[in-house]
Amino acid sequence: MTKGRADANSRKRSVLTVLVLVTVGAFFYFYSQNNDSSESPIEYGDKSLKHIVLGVDKDNDESSSILGGVEDSVVPKSIPVCDDRLSEVIPCLDRNLIYQTRLKLDLSLMEHYERHCPTPERRYNCLIPPPPGYKIPIKWPKSRDQVWKANIPHTHLATEKSDQNWMVVKGEKVVFPGGGTHFHYGADKYIASIANMLNFPNNNINNGGRVRSVLDVGCGVASFGGYLLSSDVIAMSLAPNDVHQNQIQFALERGIPAYLGVLGTLRLPYPSRSFEFAHCSRCRIDWLQRDGILLLELDRLLRPGGYFAYSSPEAYAQDEEDRRIWREMSALVERMCWKIAAKRNQTVIWVKPLTNSCYLKRLPGTRPPLCSYDDDSDAVWGVKMKACISRYSDQMHKAKGSGLAPWPARLTTPPPRLAETHYSIEMFEKDTEVWQQRVYNYWSKLGSKIKPDTIRNVMDMKANLGSFAAALKDKDVWVMNVVPENGPETLKIIYDRGLIGTVHNWCEAFSTYPRTYDLLHAWTVFSDIISKKCSSEDLLIEMDRILRPKGFIIVHDKRSVVEYIKKYLSALHWEAVTIYDIDQDQDDDAVLIIQKKMWVTSDSIRVSG
Image: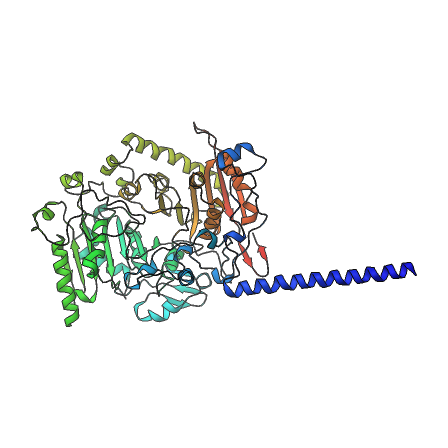
C-alpha cells in the first residue's frame, strides 16, 4: 500500500511537471509570435550578438591584450538566419527603418534616399539568406547581357521600361539589350555619337586614354557604364534606392561597377577632381534647385577640362517650360565658366575651364560664389554640399589641367596630387611593388579554387593608394576601392590612377545590396575596427551580407586576429582555403583566405557545399 501511494504521488508530480513545461513553452511561443508581428522575426543586437566582442579569447592572454581585453567573450556555435523578407536588406538604406524610427526628413531634398544607419541595438545580427531558387551568377562577360531572374526576382522594370529596351524577361533569365531611357537603340551607338560630337579620334570615347573615369548620374541598370568598359573607360554608375529600387542590384549582378547614392544634401563620397566626364541621360534631376547646388557638386567632381553630357528634353524641347529651364540652366553654367563643347539633336555637352582665370574675371557678387580658401573640397564623409565653386589648386591652375598621364600609363605613374599627401614618389613606387607580390601570392594560394572567370566584382576594404587594385590590371575584374573616412585622403590618388572607389566607415553597413561582390580584401580592417571600439562580429556579418555564395575573403591582419576569425568560420558557414604567415619585416601578420559556402533556408540551414 505504501508503494502504491508513492507511485500515485510520483505520477501526480510527473503530470504537474509536464503541465508546467507546456505552460512555459506556450508562453514563450506566444511571446515570440507577438514579437514577430510587432517588429520582425529577427533578433536585434541586444538580444543576440551585441555582447560578443571579436578578438578576445579567455584562454589567450596575448589575444586579450591586443584585441580589447574583454574576458567574458564567447564564440557562437551558430548565427541566426534572417527572415526571407530581408533577403535584399541594405541596413543604412532601409525604408522600414525610416518608418519605424519616424525620422523627420525633407523628401524634396531626397534625404530619405541618403544613408540612415540603425543604432547598434537595432542592427540585424543574422545572416541574410539568398532568395528562393538562387543560382551562382552568370560569369562575365556574358553577365553584361543576361542574369538569372531568380537572383533578382523583380521584373517591374522590364514592363515599365519596355519601350526603352532596359531589360527583357526571357524564361529563367533577364536579358539586357543595351538600351536606356535616351538610347533605345543601344548604349554602344550612343557612346560613339558622343565621341563623334567631341571629335575624339576614331569616335572612341577614351580620347586616346585622356578620358578614363566617368560618373553616370541616374544610371538605370548601368548599360551606359557597361558598354564603356570595352573602350577602357570605367564609370561609377550612381543611382538611389528609389522607385526603381533594384536598378543598382541589376548593375552589380551584371558585373558592372555601381554604387547606391543620391544627389541630395550631402557631398557624394568621392574627392574633388575625380572624373573626366559626367553623364546624365534623362536623370530627372532639378539642376536649378537651391542655387544650382547639385550642378556645383558635379563641378566639384569634374577635373579641369572635364565634360558634362546632358541628354534631356530641356536641351531640345520647344514647349515653354522646357525653354525656361534651358535658359536658366544656360545662364547658370555660363556663370560657372562652363562652355558648350557640342550640341546636337537631344544632347548638349559642356566643358569646364582648365584654370581659375575665368572665375577670377567674374564681376563682384556674381553667383554662385567661389568657395572659401579654407574649404576642403576633398572632405566628403557626412559633409553637406555647398552652393559654391571649388577652385583649382595652385598646381592645377599653373599646369592648366590635372597633369595626369593617359591611361593605362597613369595606373603606375605617380600623379601630381601625390605631393598633397604624406607619400613620396619612392613610397608610391614601393607600395606598387609590394602589392604586386602580395596579389601574386594570394592568387597562387587560391590555386585550383578559381578560374579566370570566377571573380568579377572585387572590393578592397582598405585600399590605401590603390596598389592592390593596380596589381589586378591583367585580370578581368573591377575593384571598388574603399578608403577609411578617418584616414589619409588617398582616394584622390586612387582616382588619379584611373581606378574608382569610395569613402566609408566600416563601423556601419556598406551602401550595396546583399550578394554583390565575389571577393573582399580586408587588409588590417579588423585591427582598425577594434581600435575604433566597434563590433567586429557586426563587420563579419556585414561581409557575409555583401559576399556572393562561393565568393572569397582575404583577411590580412595580425596573427591573433586571424586566429580568432577562424573560430567564427563554422557559425558563418565559411571555410578556410588556406592560412599562411607573411615572410617580411612585418610584426606577426598572417593571411587567411576564406570561401563562403552556398546554403539555403527552410526550417533550418542546409549546407550544400
